[in-house]
Length: 86
Image (tube, rainbow, N blue to C red):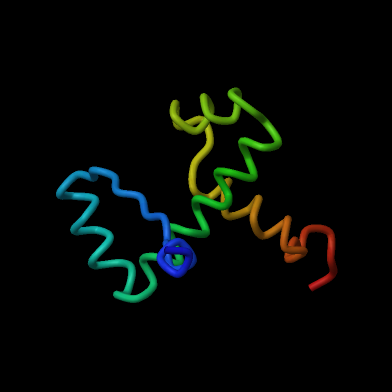
């Protein structure tokens, strides 16, 4: 029984519009969709850890978006180039 639990990988399923699905298929190569979604989820979780319910409200009301999440992740990973000479 322990082996089954060791192999368990949680998954999520969300409904999206047909238009968003078509855009996703056209813009994101197959095989990269999962890593992209995981990166976005990690950004959301980091944001909520820092900002709590306010962060969720900003995201849901579209006052912040995926670009902000990716910038947050980039800064967290030490890839922030702001202020560096080019």
